Image (cartoon, rainbow, N blue to C red):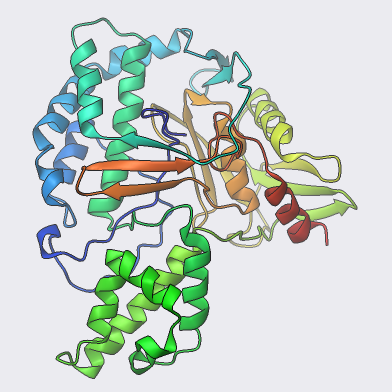
Length: 404
């Protein structure tokens, strides 16, 4: 979903343990979906980032360029939205209009099939400096696809900044962290209090992992600080357990209990929506192209009345009227949000979340470079929605969860 240099949008998040980052008190992980949603004007969003609790020194050094870009984009917002409604060609995509005003839905369908996808992990980098260079190149140009790209890039990096500096999300876990955090989680399950958190009770691999993540290292230090009271150390221990469990969730498939097996090789996914039939038909088509296999078929059953439905079981689909924002799924609220001008390839990625998959791209914050590095696999739809498909691993996870 992201497209910085080739960034796959959506994010992980950062909790700061350094005094320079603001309030250094104990903090629980925020149970949210790393949406990076910017609900305010761009200037208001930048001002929020400027006063964020968990911002770092390098964040502040970019405040002036963030504000300059935000002011121009806010001034051009109406013009940019009008440009998109004309359905101009977009590099690699054709825009189409579904539904009827005021409930129309504009989306981008691929105009070419990407071939020769890599099976190796790739990395892309995103920074305010790169965004500002693009801004300087086009600031005197008329509205075009280059301005379209600028706003999407702005929303991407500003959203990640908000998750990290305002919400306190952890942006330090990467593609290789899954097995390590699982091992640490299992070892922590054997402990009962802070008194058990001593080096001899943990493997060298887990201790090395703790020391490689500033957030975890800070908790470990506070848990084992003899100058703190037993109550304070136990409090740090409790919070540490919650952070490890929260981090582990980012690598874990979570079955959707509303999905039913309706035949030996077919599953039914109910989704509530009042969108028009042509929109729903497209969503089902895009989803089936990715999530249907010879031995497993996905059927979406559209529900227009939630009366009698078990609470918090069925997801609801919302077609939002705002352009240039990240589509997302909230598992806590059981909601799927698609924004105007979304790529058609993003839809099966979001349906993947509804099926139970986490994101499989990893966004890592580098404070020294003041940039984000995204690790992604081109072949995996949950890692790179513009290019990916469902992997064999994901196919097997679906069969294990829903066809047994």
